[in-house]
Picture 1 (cartoon, rainbow, N blue to C red):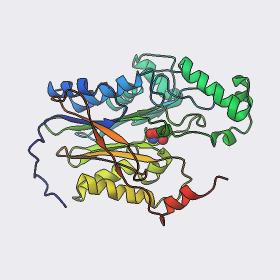
Picture 2 (cartoon, protein in one colour):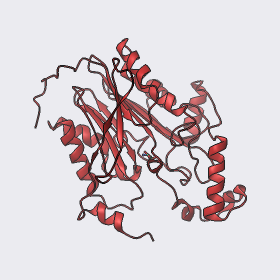
Picture 3 (tube, rainbow, N blue to C red):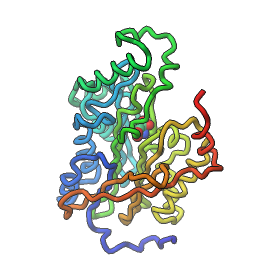
Picture 4 (cartoon, helix red, strand yellow):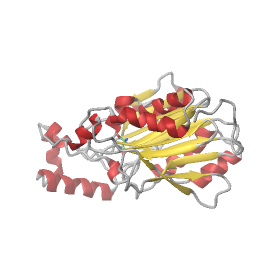
Length: 337
Ligand code: ASP
């Protein structure tokens, strides 16, 4: 079902946003689009609101920390009009990683800053500093160290020699339902995408997933469409999943077919699995689709909002699990070593 390029849908002029189920501020972002704001503004607004949500332990403030009790945030933003992008990885101590990512896009010749360099840049850009470890997240981390590792005093973890062994217990926040993704399309057809996450809970310090990597966790190109991923970042990193979806749309596939094809690529990967992958995508005309590697009983959903909606609408994600004979299915079934 290839659509001829240039065959615009009737509603292609309505501003539209799709996002992961936990995204906040979508109606405000859609209203801003309706007033003529650029899609990067809409995406940044919605992602910032999600980063500020203390009840979301997978994004921004109150995110679950790494093994050492540090909240390391990753974020990326891409403008589909220019193909410019900016990202930060393992950023500590700043309230809105998505805004730092946007500043990288706008102020630097670089695309990705990590760790101390990212923090230094955030300070130079006068981004708001914040202690990102909430009391609740600190308590959960301490309980984790005590119950799983027998470390009554969390300070002890700093002197553990084989932290790599402990890193095996990192948890994909998608199991708790997290990481925010957002794709906005303005009435003029401009697209933007944004992602933000605190990554895997109890991860090895410095671990980056797909979220700060343009092409793996997100991608936007006005000519064809945009895509964003949540879930097991090592998996989508292996196939450049978001860019793949957009490339498949470039070949003329519908958004649904493009996502299905990118999912098939994921099914071919032999990697130690600890989670699922969820993809949301929109084509250049505003057709959208979401899918998950979870099985048919999945109840995963993504959000959609236009300026006319009284509240964000939910859309079910299609189930696209690895077929039993695929490398991914075999890796999933393999016992832990
Ligand atoms: N993709 C994110 C990561 O790998 C986590 C998630 O979306 O659940 O860090």
